[in-house]
Image (cartoon, rainbow, N blue to C red; front, side, top):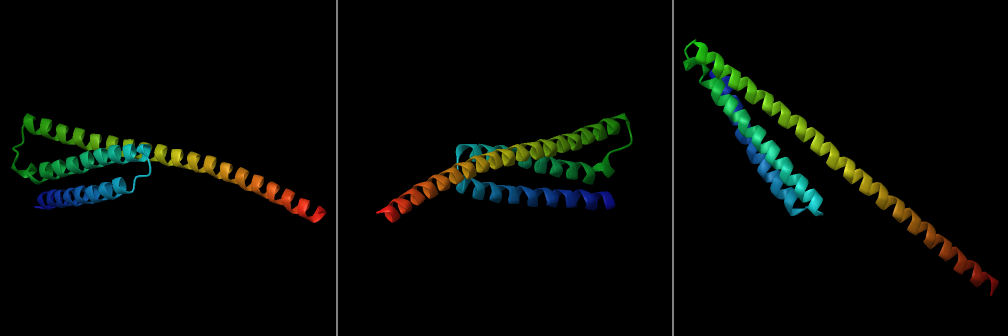
Length: 138
C-alpha cells in the first residue's frame, strides 16, 4: 500500500514537473536574447523533460512492484529500475554542469561589457574635461 502511494506520488510529481518545464521553456524562448541562450534553454528542457518523464516511469515501477512475484525476473526488474534512477542522477548532474557553464559565459560577457562601458565613460570624461578646459582658456 505504501509503495503504491509512493509510486503515485512520483507520477504526480513527474507530471507537475513536466508541465512546469514546458511553461518555463516557452517563457525562456520568448525572452531569449541570443542564439546561445536559446540553445541552452532547449538543451536544458530536453534534459529536464527526460528526467521528469523517467521519474514517472520509476513511479509506475514502484506502484506495480507488489504485483511482481519474487523470482530472478524480479531482480532484473529492480536492476532496470536502479539503472533508470542512476540515469536520472546523470541527467541532473549534466543539467548542473550545463547551467553552470551557461552562467559562467553570461558572467564573462557581462565583465567584458562592463569593461567596455568603463572605457567609454573614461573617454567621455576625458573629452568632456578637455572641452571644458578649452572653454575656460578662451
